[in-house]
Length: 184
Image (tube, rainbow, N blue to C red; front, side, top):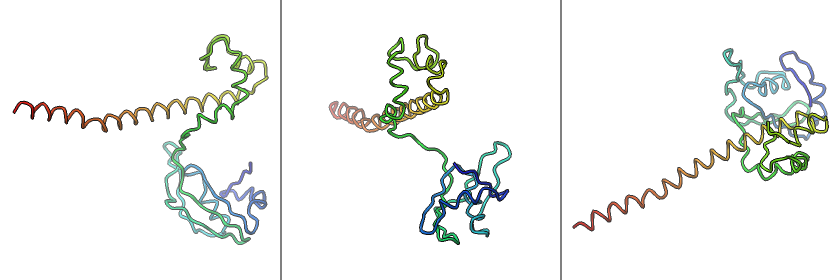
């Protein structure tokens, strides 16, 4: 990880290995984190419009609205992207077992097969954290991702139910029309 501050003008030397001639770098992040400000600092001129974060919630505003490519004086190419509002996990559930194989292995020792590794008694994963075998941050990441996946799964199921209801709405209408026609 490289820490850079365009406002303070610090940390730029650490970027040199990434900005060699012929390389391409893409700036990605939330609105207001300083992607466009960094471009301006690297080019030594104001080429990108920038904005301050909102004082009420310290969130950035979408100033950059389109992707742009810039050539730096040293020959590197840098792409400035609009801020990301959210990243959806999509079908990440398939990779959870691989990504958190250590937790999956420890979970085999849990008292309950459906242990969520949250507050259940006999949780082998929590015991591993308490014993210093598994870093607490690792379990926190796992729990956070699991919660996000559950949210997106539920959100997708609701969306699918709406689509299904919409697709089959015509059956109810057709049945009513059929009953009307049958009376005459």
